[in-house]
Image (cartoon, rainbow, N blue to C red):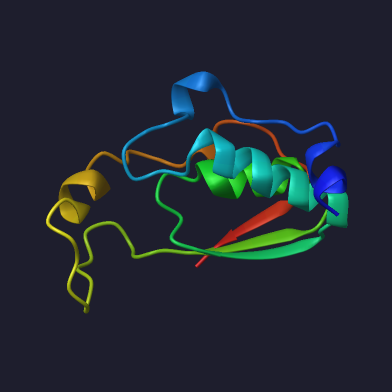
Length: 110
């Protein structure tokens, strides 16, 4: 299975959206995209949308389907305790990458 995950052609977002504080690593995105392609995923659920890089990577590497993504609304406070840097990192998000670039799967923000 490992070869199947690492062998398909994958698409990553533009470099300027990679390796931001609070986001997924490049290695993580490569693995997720490879998994989506190898398993021919048509439905995914993501918790923690942040800036939408992982959401877009899921949707872009599907041939069709739906990505449901869940995040706190902008300006809302979490009920559970956050790390000291979490609020600072959340303020860095000004929009979602998936609104900037095309993707074949539908994205539903919750």
